[in-house]
Length: 286
Ligand SMILES: C[C@](O)(CO)[C@H](O)COP(=O)(O)OP(=O)(O)OC[C@H]1O[C@@H](n2ccc(N)nc2=O)[C@H](O)[C@@H]1O
Ligand SMILES: Nc1ncnc2c1ncn2[C@@H]1O[C@H](COP(=O)(O)OP(=O)(O)OP(=O)(O)O)[C@@H](O)[C@H]1O
Image (tube, rainbow, N blue to C red; front, side, top):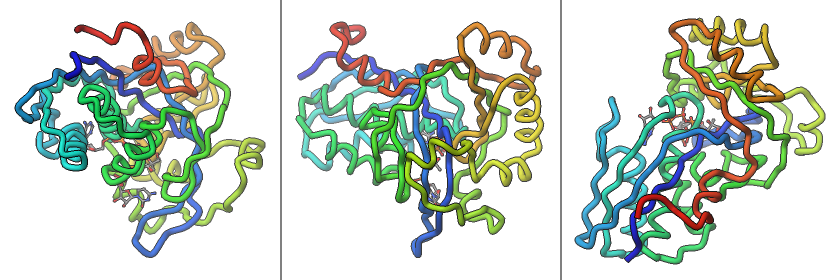
């Protein structure tokens, strides 16, 4: 059995997000560019031999049984028949319902981490398929490479956008992804373009105008941030991000954010920090 493993669950940004249609099952076809940042949650996995699974601490508003971390661990046990278990400690730093994919990233890190810890030998593609049943964004975190995503977000083409510094701000409101996707006012008719075409056009987020209308806090903060740098919303919000050439330039703006706002500065990464950590010789407390 493997030893204790500590691994990052980084945030993602949707550098652009276009909705190109709605399918019969209600899900939406998208075109989005995913990139990771070097900031996120940390998960520590301590193996147990009796098959038990435990997670601490609990997240406010999420029943422990519903936590994507435990759901991912259980899914892996069921899929493989693995008799081992784990005690999982979560250091949660990403705002929930922020469009940063924190829950999906936690789930992906659990699949990848327990596959390693329990020595299951599942291929990345198998883990990504398992992950898709937990959420549309899980596969990109499992694969760990910045990507142009199509379909419902599951058809991934690796991409290498520039890796600037970002200031990511949370306006302090939580946006339910399902509420945005079911709103009749959501635009759903962006053209389906190639990645090459998309890279040449300005980058936008089709959910942004609607989220701004539903949540004036988002509109206000985005208006503030745009005074400093090019800025957009990620995913279905509520977090927004601005792009900078250097860490100090981003930190200077972070130092001036309004009182109610939290945020962080992070570097864009086309390879997920999860894989840097997995490949590092020292993988945390042993
Ligand atoms: C929009 C993105 O944030 C882009 O990164 C994600 O694709 C959303 O991913 P997620 O939060 O993991 O979403 P899921 O948990 O799979 O879906 C939440 C809800 O969003 C809607 N949904 C999600 C993804 C998608 N392509 N079309 C949808 O209509 C569905 O109503 C679904 O019930
Ligand atoms: N480990 C977890 N971390 C965060 N949220 C979780 C977790 N497990 C379950 N959830 C539930 O999932 C919901 C969405 O969480 P998440 O932080 O991934 O949203 P998000 O950042 O908006 O993601 P996306 O960009 O994929 O829409 C939360 O509001 C919470 O109820």
